[in-house]
Amino acid sequence: MRSRRLSWTFLVMASVAAAPSARATEVPVGPGAGPPADTTERITLDEAIRRAVARNPTLAIARAEVARAEGLLEQARAGWWPTLVGNGVYTRLDHDRVLNEKVIAAENQIAGNLVLTVPLVAPQGWTADRRARDARRVAEENAGDVRRLIAQATANAYLSVLAQHRQIRSTEAARANARAHATYAHTRLAGGVGRSIDDVRAQQDLATVEVQLQTVYTGLVRAREALGVLVGGATPVDSVNGVDLGKLPSLPDALEDARARRPDIDAQRGKVVAAEHARKDVWAYYAPYLAAVGQPFVQIGSALQAKIGWQAQLLLTLPLYDGGLRAGVGGERDALVTEARANLDASLRQAQSEVRVAFESLLHADQALLSVREEVLLAHKAYDLANLAYEAGATTNLEVIDAAHRARDAEGDASQAEDVARHARLDLLVASGRFP
Image 1: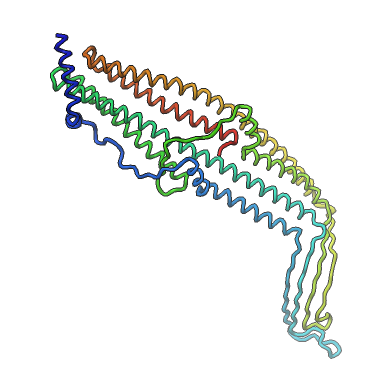
Image 2: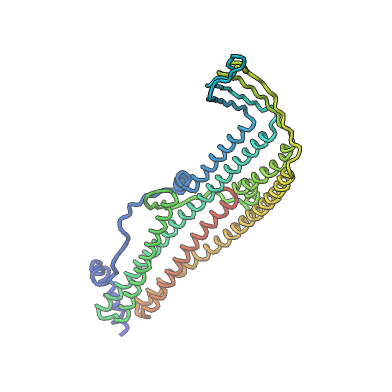
């Protein structure tokens, strides 16, 4: 009896190898065998970041803030630069003014002058100029931080696309295995040595894998669309096969880089410097203002003034009492310095915490990746052994399907572990200020 079963097994295996075209007609494989033809543009990570930085509207707004700060600097500079103003006046009287039969004020009078003001001592203008320069510097550093965040978001989307491709490859391999097993079980049933329950189980498992594969295809579509939006494109964008994030720093180097290279930390330092400058500049509210004023003029229609002339003045303004304005400004700016320093300290602590978390996450992710790769090897080995036992008639296909499930789960774990490891590397580079 046993020799008869083995002979039937060999016969079935031979028929499967000799008639591959019969597999597709005898076993249902679901509504779709794969995604449509792929015409999506593929770009590298560097190109994705370049496009995102060039087209992202958030960064465009940050650049506009830099331009706005430049405009405010020009406005502040006007406080201590010379100004030239022209004035013209036309006066209409009801009649000529006459004294001793002389017209001293005509019925129609025209007057014009130019007023040139040259600030000689303008402390508030000088200090306003410096504060505007500080504000522009902070705006530039904030734009750098926005660029970092956009690059990070783009890289995360790019890695998500890679992870979906990895999941698709493993799920397609699982579908091929499930289809081969379903074909084998169906051929055995047709040859009289199989069981209907084995055939049904195998086809059910194939349908399950097909559903999983379509879900992964949908995930790839979503990931491509997300990447396309981030890079400012009108169509979805795909990734190339691999990505090199560069050399990873050691923990001490990463902690030091986080203090020295991160643009958000630089922005907080810039705010501290700006607040300290503003506090020191309170003296300008106590200082005098001195300006030279020159005024050439033309007067037509008045006998009391020369027709053409000029005058010059020195204008000195000395603030004596302001109702407490200067004291209030000083108190406000002291508080701003305290706030800026507190924010800088908090940002430094947060940055170093992010570095430590990223570094530890990287170590654990790499260890998990090694373990899950061993899990994949063992799962595939168990699947092969289950197949051999089933083909030899020593067991049912329950063990084969269970082993296939475990192999698919292991592949899914491997895909997720690879994605986690890539993201951990990216997080470490971003936290240390080495990306982008």
